[in-house]
Amino acid sequence: MVTKSTNEAQRRNFYRIIYSRDYMPEIRINGHRFLILDISEIGARIDNPGDMRLIDDTLNVSIEFHNGQKLNSTASLYRYEPKKFVIRFFQNIPYSYIVGEQIFLIRQNRKFSEDDLVQAS
Image 1 (tube, rainbow, N blue to C red):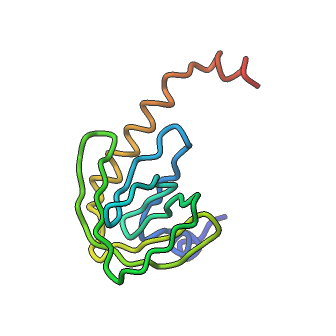
Image 2 (cartoon, rainbow, N blue to C red):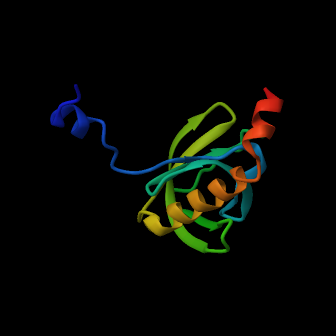
Image 3 (cartoon, helix red, strand yellow):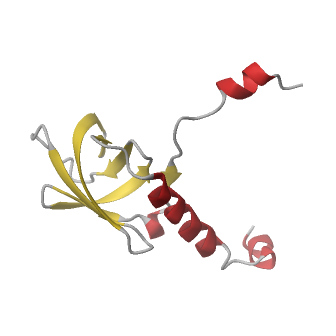
């Protein structure tokens, strides 16, 4: 049985979208182009195959989402990982942008019928 306290402990403060390689949106950071691996209202993990190092304290960020919404924001470098880095937005991305991306990805997945999925496995 799940108790109320267990339920509350599992709630998230934000939602993260993890992209497949085919649907990674582009992000421009201080004029350089990268692909977004995953994104939430508070930050994003960025693909960095060349292990480029960002040295600025404030990063100017521009994202065009799949539904055509554009976001210009500022962020800071949060952490480097091998071939990736994580940024944190100074101001959270509006939740509506995250929902718009979720809707786009759900629609893309609907292109496959249940029969296609059974045949592929």
